[in-house]
Length: 82
Image 1: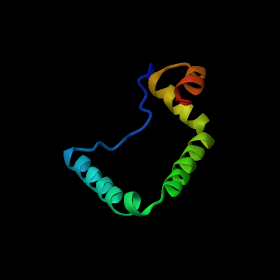
Image 2 (image 1 turned 30 degrees about the horizontal axis):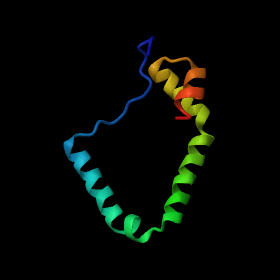
Image 3 (image 1 turned 135 degrees about the vertical axis):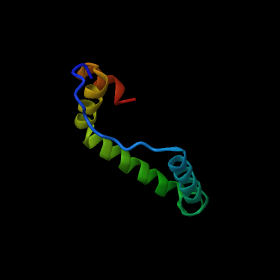
């Protein structure tokens, strides 16, 4: 940001972390999520995630604005709806 103030400390992943995440995602897709979860259930999960993001859209816009320096109106009206 313009002030160079630290907004947050975030853990950094390495190659092993990425490989582990991909392995777990592949296992989930090849078992319960991909084979056993119906399309209707998966859609319900995605819609719930979308609803949670919508509930917190002001917070998300604020964080994104602080992170990239864009005006809040642009972040909340253009970036987040995408």
